[in-house]
Length: 269
Image (cartoon, rainbow, N blue to C red):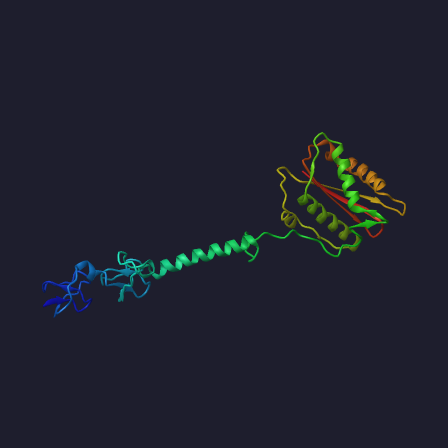
């Protein structure tokens, strides 16, 4: 015959309240299986009904949230008898919610970086483009504008000691500004380009990016060489730094206007 706590069920050798497990102030007689004090203590925990924090004793208030009501909950054990209650049994609801929130943030961040989910500040932004531009970005009177761009780049590079690189980032910036200038000049549109959109372009320039522009008529008998010669003379006159300064990177765009001129914008750093 032993004494048992009616509140938590822990056996005691003597009728000597309070219960050292839950603090209850009275015992009752009972026949209970032999067990150690440590085993009796690990049979259950007291959980705060407000936040779920587990406590070894029924001794409010809650150490986390100050809640005044506890409820008795059994502990479950892993298959390995040498281990105590599993993490998910002992952790409170707040700990689990915090862990799940961190995992969710990491997942969203990964999706944002890869572009699956649009997350401001994380998702790579598409470079701005300008649509419905009058004229032709490819040819004018049989002159291939991509050839004009290549020859103009070679001419600008040949006038300096160190040859600059033609980069996709500066090409894209030059295209954006050139198409915007043509659209404004031939449609009356205003504020087609903006500084905020210009900052969205991806470049590797360490120094300030400089822009220049020129236009050259391309009549029925025009050739790529004649167009390039006229554009080069205008650029050298208006923007001498394209040859006098140190240019490491260069971007070019050529666009045919509705009146058969070739408009060119260069971007360099």
